[in-house]
Length: 420
Image (cartoon, rainbow, N blue to C red):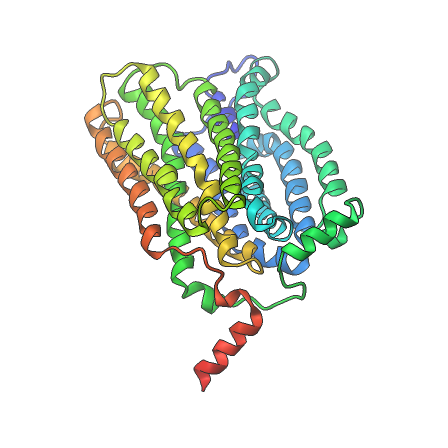
């Protein structure tokens, strides 16, 4: 997200002190979306690669190459618009491996009653975005927009070193954990150790899988509406000068990450104490992660309120959506441990697709006049309604039971039965 701010800052700085990029709004939009296209492709293949050859290598090289390409971005931007598109696409491709790789690690390290905390930790990236938005302006103003890329590329390298030293594919391979912890994890995590063929046909014809994919699409839909449409609405239609800084965007990401960790920990506590069933926890949490945020988006459509009202709504929507650590972020692990990377990679790609679609939805309704509050109302009605509908379908179609195709033996038995 600091890329968005760095790119847009190019039009705000003086040509005498900094290099400016004479890109049209359409070209800037293409540069920002090119990352998402690369991300979708990697999400689809990242899970199977991590499951077969090891998530540690996938995550490590995904972050390493991403750091290098981030530092190369200013040179690409100055060279040409096409060069920037290519670098951003490749950068998105390598970052796209990280999420499914992390979910493979989660499936091999998190016992059933720790999934919420682990999935909350995976959302630590939102804290990184909060830090980036907070300090990006401080870097750009004195040193130039290029340092919005150089700085974050440089600080990635020591973190990559820590990852290589601390992270291993499974408890059995880790040289530093105690034998007691290793035995506990091995006894409580049932996952196939041998390499398996992925039962794509059974996954793609599974109703619980598609329910998970739809609810993830809805989550991405709502998130991208908040981080793209809402600030533009506040600045253009309402005339409030709060979207010109990174403070609002930084605050939303901090809220989501903080509440994600909190909700995940509370969910694990409830499961450990057996105060609620897994199915009840997942499905009741839909009202927090999707229904309440959907109502929040609809409430954005009404002009005439103070700026604090809209800031509170945006922050509240992101904070409540942090409860995906009770629903979408962990349901893939409920359905399958053996193919968690594959399943979560596909559904994460669905979230990214939503990120590509939402700007076009906004443009469709506001193409005549972005400053008209009336034209923005159907934007938020549509955004909020889809947010809620995608969540509510999970109540009827979603499942928390391990699917038969999780076990390769059972999958083969099912095929034999179909042939017979």
